[in-house]
Length: 186
Picture (cartoon, rainbow, N blue to C red):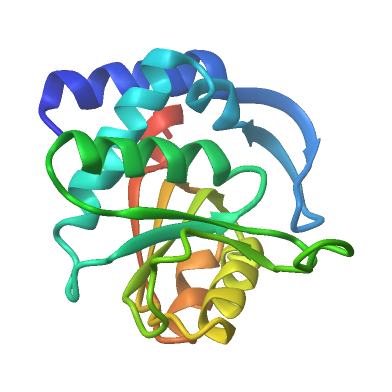
């Protein structure tokens, strides 16, 4: 991602997604800063920029991923935008949506993915914000249980609150577009 595009994405995230106040995070911790990446990723410009950036980042990984997957709901717009960005550049990077629990009807699947994606494929996990890493780990465990190879995780924002270390303990390397400090100027 070139510098002007990165600067634009940082500006959008700061304007739309970073909030200050008193917030309880998914990890249970209280924070004076909340990051709601969906407020940016669900806009046309923000979604497009995030998709481009995550695709470019995914192409630096070894092995190169065949798909990108993450836990619903935060990852849904990310995997879609990234898959589309890949297609626009002549690459295949399928999207996988990981449910928080298997469907209780129909196919009773935990994952929604193209039927042409073979087991054993390298898949990169994605999350909008990584704090403790718990939701990213939940997605990785589901992807691995489905037979996919997961060695890397991508995030739009790393809060630098232990998630990177938690993922590393599972053999996962976290790559983030931004740290919270970069967006807040801390």
